[in-house]
Length: 434
Image (cartoon, rainbow, N blue to C red; front, side, top):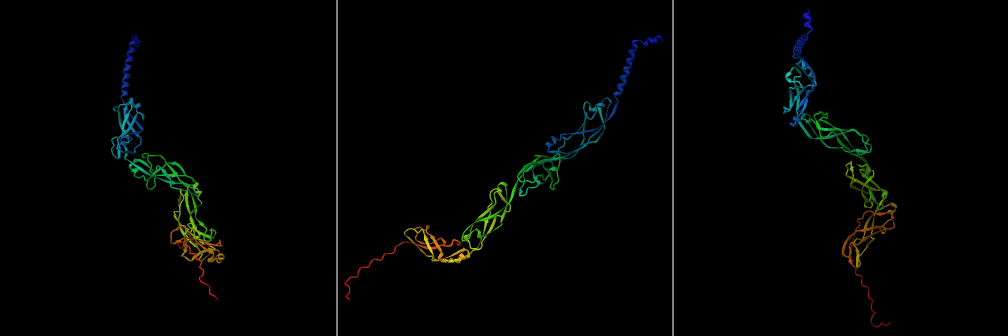
């Protein structure tokens, strides 16, 4: 017994026991570490390689791709379990071998941080592959801008066609979408406009039926469109003529009708406010007896537009309350006769049409009418000529001559004074005796 106690209390004994325990512990740990365990990871995100560069270099575009998460069941040594997490396990799909458009089922690659792939066995994975839809990259360099004006314009003003800048845009993206784009639609909302305004607005790509085409894969040359809405004033402007008194008639005796009576103009408000009427021309009341009608071209002032589109107006002028009468006169004289020449009237009388109040017209006869022909233009040219005249009504200013075509024919001759009578000689011889 004493010997056993001695052994138990000896240092050598404890050393032997410690060595045996170490060996047993090593054998246990080695056996535990070499056992394997299953690890299941869910929610692994998939990354795609080559879609943003290589495919675009080939005029290809990833139209659609699986974005669902991946679930993996892995078999690994017990010692590696803690190193396999969603942050250290990566799932990727390589698109760099795709060279045409179409739908592809791509097997994904699994990689690990700080763990050798040979130490991991993939027992299950879901899904087995990822589906990728690749389309041809297309460009439409000129997509038209079309606007919708959802607003109002103040009374007395008008909106002219909206101006867009740029007028077209360039779009690029999947050919299946780009081919359906008809135009870029903008909607402008402004209220009670009375002046030209500008601004910027976003746009929507639409198809031929007006349905929006939206995709993150479509790129546009601009993100906004600048617009200018020209607002002009609209005004009805009357048409008129100037009346020249004549033939015994004044403006008060005339009735003027213009067809159309006015036209509608548009233009800048500040300028258009200064235009109250457009004068078509001048009508001489002495050029006709009762009624005259004439057509005029409507001359539009610079800086305004003729919204009516009418280019000509017809003016009818009638004289009211006056009587007319034809008077024959023989009272023809000549002015500005060249010295040394003598005029001789070939025209002996002329019928003159006069107009005025009835009570005045009845008092006028040929003795009150005087025709004066001006021979200035004839000068010293001997011969016969038809020369214009001026007709005067003496003593009755209320009446006037209608028309101016009262030419007379004159014969211009060299003036030869008549010889004077010579005094007779006394008779010769003696007077006869009674």
